[in-house]
Length: 340
Image (cartoon, rainbow, N blue to C red; front, top):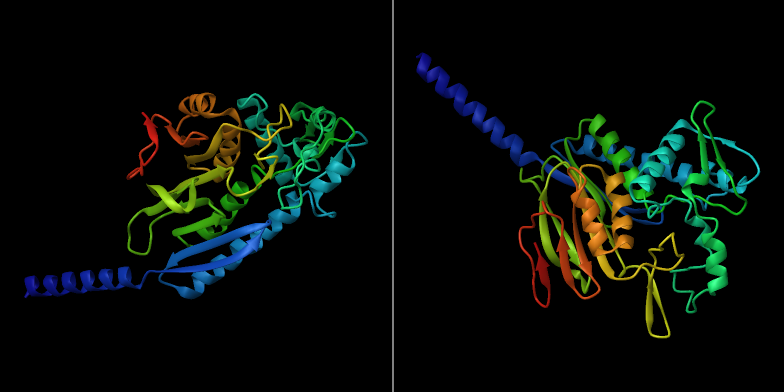
């Protein structure tokens, strides 16, 4: 009798477990936030909880956009920029902390990552309206305002001061990753143990897919961006790609991408795309831009010195360069060469 009872309990438990597994579904919402396409996915057996968590993530991203946007006349970031060379501006601790972390990444990359690069924004437009390049004099003048060391942060007073008039800060190279992290944390706090926040290819994934497998993330082929070059199988990781194939313009037959080298004021060259893989979307976002500017040799050298961070670089010559610990499920090696 005891054996029979135990067998019934065991069968019932297995049945309940299997049913629970079958009930897991992926719920998604896609919309434009922070000037780009966000797709937010929650995997759950509770549709109402999943959709509520997505709504919470969207609200959080909108809140962050209002805080860090340099295009919103009422944002704290705009207030900092408007008072460059004039006075310190009191801002939220959250913004203080983001600026401090940004300056640490600037130190790590010797100024290749620099949120004060925003002073060159007016010179380069990648919205289809520009077909001529700025003059050397214009570029030289704008670059003179770039120096993250002139961003003075007073944590005790919660103020930020840009030392020189004409300086501007912007979070275009770190903001989406930061927002993805924060949105993920909101969803986790609501009980969503599996999900993805994807900001136009800058994503963070946690837990599992609805079939209980780890997430399969495709890396776009920069030669044909609608095709996949390779797959990453991940969980609790961010994957961020910076490429020259999304935003650019052509002048006199030469292609100029939207990723600007803050040291020169000119668009970075030599690289088609950089993908960074690490547990933190904010760091991945910042490093993807940095490695793109550094180029394949110096870029992979930097990544190989960092713990739990990997990269995949595609050069202008379609050569594939990867960090020492990176593993893809496969490569499409047509007309490409892999450096191990």
